[in-house]
Length: 417
Image 1 (cartoon, rainbow, N blue to C red):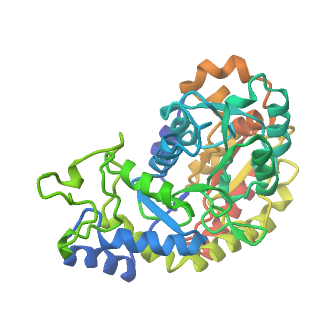
Image 2: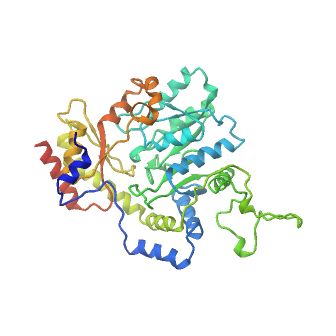
Image 3: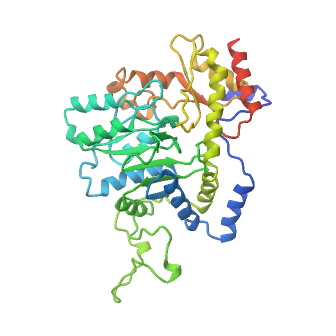
């Protein structure tokens, strides 16, 4: 059996259309050089600048930057567990979420000692279905053991947050948005990530706003912000965004002259090392300045591909277009009676230099790490299972030019002919 990777090696390709890209222009190089010239690599002023700018961009009061989107999920969930204001959020309590997501969402739930519970998704925009959430809670034997609803704005498509929040309020649940793939997407005029108690983002290399590897949690809640700052730094006592000690002042320094301790090395919660370097934050700042351009370019690319590939709509479900969506990529679902399989299409695209990825898979029934859940969920989340086996995506990023897009269209024409 040949793997896609084998096919790529065997067939020389003159052109490569990547799923994601990052190009170092003058602004990016200047941002990196600024960090080098400052002589400080670990978290400092650039991280603080990014946190302020990103909170303003999403329209929240606070932002805590961490080293990945996965870490953002873990630190956000951990803060909710530690915070005594949320007694329902405790180890072993249940989190209702989507089965169709990048596995990090579910890994974070499990790694923090919570239990994921899955309901089905909308087949058109991949978002968790509020009616399925409500149906599940109404029929649950132990509704008091549920603590969180965790919707994922997959591929940039906003979930139905009004309905999700209504259900959460009725059942006394916390809402935490996974906005890792939705920087800038709008839900009724508000940015995703600003619609719940807290929300996470990822700035992975292929995402809408990129920094290589970085994540963030945004919230309006000051106490959660303080907790997350502690948790991401091994649970240390101090939670200052930028250390004030070089200025001769520390709010956590012992007031009693007989005491001797350093708050950076006194730990009042059990945490992680999720801190980042100044480089990622500097790149994040440079990309935030281009956010409007990035989203408009991605939307234009999606619109163009939709128009040119519409003639294959008997076989392919193309992404629904909306000016409110900040597109992570260009997702395609193979329709039930298509003459092509996903495997065939993906291999043919790769042979012709068009990089692609499967759309993550249905976690409880298609990811080997969660095989223990397969019997429980198989056949009960049909939309997620179908999409998990029959959907994939190609790039729509801002670095694609008109020739690239025409080339993508020409390869689809070649395959379908």
